[in-house]
Each structure stands twice: as structure tokens, then as C-alpha cells.
Image (cartoon, rainbow over all chains, first blue to last red; front, side):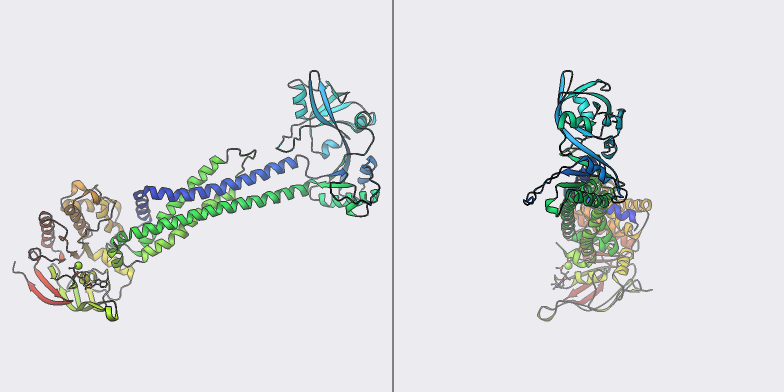
Length: 403
Length: 229
Ligand SMILES: Nc1ncnc2c1ncn2[C@@H]1O[C@H](COP(=O)(O)OP(=O)(O)OP(=O)(O)O)[C@@H](O)[C@H]1O
Ligand SMILES: [Mg+2]
């Protein structure tokens, strides 16, 4: 009595009850497929959001002017501006060893026009270090230079969205674009960064800080300072260095009356990933339950099968089937059901995850495929072994007397 | 020569206390190789109980049983299944073929459990089916065969493994007279080939085919005589 024979007998048992076997497989199939698909969706969401945050640079801190906390300290009288001097003060090898650069940023919401077309965007006034700090590599042309800033030149570097809206297929280099009534010469373009849902990283127009301040925004507070930490690991250290320098300069006495805010990209990414991770686990748990239900389905079917086939078991025993042969026969039936069900489930999941659902491109978690498959086979073994053992332990005469 | 069946003081008690039933009560029986024995008796006299013990499907409460010189009393379940597979061929009143499984596969099954290789198994199963006159029905399912044909498939299955002993519990009980004739002719042929056969029956004319008739009354042997054939 070899393994192949036992497998063959098991397969015959399945073939003899096609509908029932099919329904059992369906249970496992849905369980396995939903585990893989739901995990892939969760993972895909995480990948997409992380990528969109990373496109801003993972080692950057953004110091924003003002505070977003609702209960601002009413005793605070002064609300100091964020200044270029603040930015300069942040680059200090002794007080802030983890800060590589600090770039002042002002933004002006304007409408830019080129020949017939116009597009509403915001013009960013900043220093040349902006491109590096914001992770915006230059595609064609040149970035802004220190010269541009010193001489308040009307140079501008455009992102791909703005180029698309204003120029279409025309090469924008050396063309003159008018933003807020001020003519700028396009000196460079920023490589496409790709937008993902909530934030279009390509909708930018970058000009020298001095030009934007003199022509568009005036010389008020900076909107923000882009601080580059030496690496994403040191960004948290850099954050506290920046905070202590600015607290001193702004005379901040408590967190409540701080007149600026530091946004840490690395911290943001890990927070977002944690949040999505929780949802992924939640989705996975729901899917795991359906896998379990599929397993109980197998037990149920196997129990029914055993009861219905008690007489058959008796006959097999009477003609010399050993306990192990009966046991393997029923186990193999359960295993085959779960392997085929699980296999089709994996295939379906692989197909389903090619579809983009609600702006999220599912990204398969390899361990979920292996895990779901292994679990489905184990479920077959585990839930099949009870009925199989029950069948195999029947005394032949009892089994034969069964009606 | 050792007898095929050697029963000593076999007792079978079902239940206990008030509901106790002594189905067999001290059976001593010895059956020689090549014998053809009919077991008769009223309903409830213990014929099937005896047959189940002889077939190693059930254990006796008391007594000793040796099959082909092997003591069955202290074998475990796994050893018993080997004994059933190699030494015994069963024929039941209700045929007991495995449903939704072709005649050929049914006949092959004892050889499958014995571990005979596929090709040889197939040849022997086909030969066995041919010997019961069903070579043309080997791919039929049991529910596509008449009662007589099903019982002939069962006979083929019982003899395919060439057991020392054929046990038949009312093999003709569910058959009409023509099929009964077919099955009895088969048994006669097998006996002529030297097989040992034990057959339970209610009918005198069926018992008349046997060489020896043992009659049970209330779990005891009341008569044991040879037919003058
Ligand atoms: N599993 C059982 N539990 C309890 N009592 C049983 C069981 N099987 C048989 N008996 C009893 O044992 C006695 C003998 O039964 P057995 O089946 O051997 O009779 P039988 O001679 O084969 O009868 P029949 O000709 O009707 O088939 C009967 O009284 C029966 O009620
Ligand atoms: Mg009976």
C-alpha cells in the first residue's frame, strides 16, 4: 500500500462528491484569497503614502511659522516672525551638529501665464539649497544660483505639473512666464516626482527668495524653513537642536506659546506606516477569520463524509485496510481539498491584486502568500485529522453494521 | 494437518446485567482445509456472530481461535487487518461493494491494501472478474449492476487475493433463484479448486451444496453432520 495508491483513493473520494468538494474548496479559496488581497491592499496603501512623503526627502524637517494648536496661550503678546536670520542661525556646527542646511521658504499664491494659457499655483521663493533639501533634482536647465538670489534675478525653475499646464509640449527653457504680474525667465525644470493622491509634488514654481519677497510677498515672516538633517536617523536629534535654537531666539517659555512648529518627515512616515500597519493587521485578522471558517467547513464536510461512508470504511477494513490506510485516505482528501482550494485562492489573489482599488495599487506581501497557503494546508491537516482519526478508529464490525 | 479454523470454547456476550445476551455459548469447531461447511440455524441463533469472529471482524468474549495455525486471540488491530487481507475473503448478504467505484476497482482493492503492483493487480482482478463471468462489466459501477451481478463481483473480490478461507453470510439471501444458482455454482467450483468455504444459510437446498452442515441453536452447536454427496 504505497503513497500513490492512497492519494489515488483519496482523489477518487473527492471526485465521487464533486459538488460538496467544490463548496469546501470554495471556503478555503475565499479565505486564502482574502488574506492575500487584503494584506496586499494594506501594504500597497503604505507603500504609496510612504513614497509620497519620501518624495519630500526623509531627512528634512520643516519649520513652519505660526502654530496650529487651538488653545494658544492668550498671555503671549509677541508673535515673532520666522526670519532669514533664524535660518542662518540653525546652521551651527556646535549647537546643531546634525543640521546640514537650513533654507528659508516663502510662498506666494499666484496665477502664472504663458502666452494663452494660465495656471494657478504658488511660487516658492527660496535659496539654491532648496532643491537638495526638498529632494527635487533638476531635469533640464540649471537650478537657481547664489547669484540669482543676490541680484534678485527673475529666474524661475518649474515643476512638471506647471510645465504641462502652461507649456504643453513646448520646451519651457528660456521662455518668459508671468507670475503675479512679474515676468520670470525659466532657467530649469524639476524632474517628475510623481504625485500620489493627496499631494502633487510636481505642482511647484521656484524663484529666488529676494525676488519673490520684493515683487510678490513683501518682507514679512518666512512661511517656513526647510532644514536638512545629516540623515533620516539623525532627524530626531536635529529636530531637538532646531527647537532649542529657535526657542532661545524667539523667547519661547513653554510649548504652549511656541510661535513655530517643526514637522519631521521621518517621524511622519513612521507614524503613517504604523497607522496603516494597524489597519493591515485588522484586515488580515478579518481575512484570517474567513480562513478559519473555511477550515471548519472542511471539518464539517469530512465529518459528514465519514458518517456517510462509515459502511464503506467497514468494508475497507473487512478486506484488509489498516488503520493507517483509512487515516491517510481521509487526510489526503482533506489535504487535497485545502491544497487545491488554497492554490486557486493564491492564483485568484495574484490576479485580483493586479487591479488598482480606490487609488491604491495592491502590493503583494510575499509572506502572506506563503503564510496563507501553509495555513490552508495545515488547516486541512488539522481539521481533517479529527474526522480521519475517527474513521480509522472504528471497529470493522461496528462500521459494517452502520446503516 | 492443521485445520483452517480451530475454535475452542468460543463465547460471545453482548451487553451486561439484565440486557445480557449470550449470542455464542461455548462453541468448539474445527474445519479442515478444503472443507465446504454450511452453518444453519434459526434467526438469532448466533450464526452471524460466529461468522464475524471467524472473520476476525469481532473479538470473542472467551475462548480460543486459531486460523491456519495462527492464534488470533492476542493479535492487535494492525495484525488483524493483515490476517483479514491475506487469509480471508468475505461475501456478505448485502454485497457490500464500495459505491461509486467500478467493479474492477472493487475487485482490485484487497490487492491494493496488500501492496501488489498496479499491473499485476489489474491482471489478477480482470482474471477474477472473468472467472465469475463479468469480464464485460468491469467498468460498471455497483448501482449499474443487478443484485446477482453485484454478488458475483463480491465473490471475485473475495477470491482475488487467494485467501485460505472464504466466508459467506447468507450470500444468496437477497438473490432470486437463478442468481442463487449462479453464485452456488461459483462456490462449488471454488470448492472443487480446493478452497475452504464457510457459508451461512437459512435454506436447506442451499445447505445441500455443502459437504458438512453445522446447526446452531441459541449459540450452541446442536448438530454437525456430513452430507452424503
Ligand atoms: N451488536 C449487538 N449487540 C447486542 N446484541 C447483539 C448484537 N449483535 C447480535 N446480537 C444478538 O446476538 C444474537 C445472535 O445474533 P446473530 O446476528 O448472530 O443472529 P443470526 O443467527 O445471524 O440471525 P439471522 O439469521 O437473523 O441473521 C441475537 O440475539 C442478537 O440480538
Ligand atoms: Mg445473520
